Length: 477
Image (cartoon, rainbow, N blue to C red; front, top):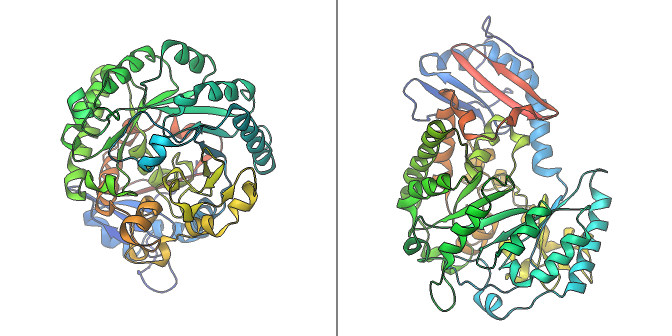
């Protein structure tokens, strides 16, 4: 670990050939942040010492010496990744009609299943592709996604059994078909399991998550699955935030804690299709309940000793503390679509991300005809992988653009009219970053992160300052 203390001042002003350090008010009574937007370097600064930092300190001097290293690592994260995962839709169909789904209703109601033969062939082609592009010994991830993958579980089961030693498998499910036999198979094969739940009660959950013929037993199915999965480390729950549940997020957190859920995502609904926009929460309405839910989660952690990581917010924290260690690739530009992962539809069509399934102009080709390499090089994929927040406003002028990434390209294109537009929740991301900096300033950030997140192989502290002006930027080697 490299540590540099503040010593004799070195004259420096925020002009000329040095780094651009932008003061960022974070709502803290005694501290604020200073950010270099280009490299995502930051410092937490006592407000009465801000002038000292900007006009002369070893903080600036040392950062200037390491600035190129920081810029290189950020460039590698943004432009140097290769795919290591695929979101695999083994069926177009779903037995639910959720209000905000990004897959068109006609596909979900009458689409096709991938046959078992085709699914096995697909996994073979994916294995061959990843073996050419990933380090030896590292297994790629296949997440059976949807629509509802368990509608085609016979084929999914055959695929997991046949390729259990070659992929890390996951399943995202609404849990209505997750009977004991299916659950036993998935847990025995150490498949990661994602459940979806949008409310602490059936009444609230059913406002957006409902069957074709009405509410059904969706909520109860998820509760039963959570009880059966208690103690299984490889599962999580996705909560999609809409105007129907936004004021109940703290209650949802309490419910998940009561069932021992190890991790969750509190995701604002993606606004790619019109149905999602109808239940969208405005930025100003979202930040307050979201942060209160995070605080409630932390209270429960200290009361019970059980830590439930809210992964999407933890990713924002990691974007600040350890940019290259972040686990999700939505909050970076270009995003992970077509770079860190891609999506496979039931008919073999390839898309940069599941959000684009149903948008034919973003199909890069077909797995069985053109293949993955051609899809990766296609104009459809390049439209997504070429989206760069540095090149359009207001993002290009934003101090936190590398903590946010202006997600999501699908909703920016469909909702706001193009890849050079912002996503749906600009203010919400800004408030998350401010809150994250407050946690760092107060020494509370570890409460919200995975256990031993900073003990991974290759992790080093590139810059660490202590004293009345403090800053830290951690990077994966």
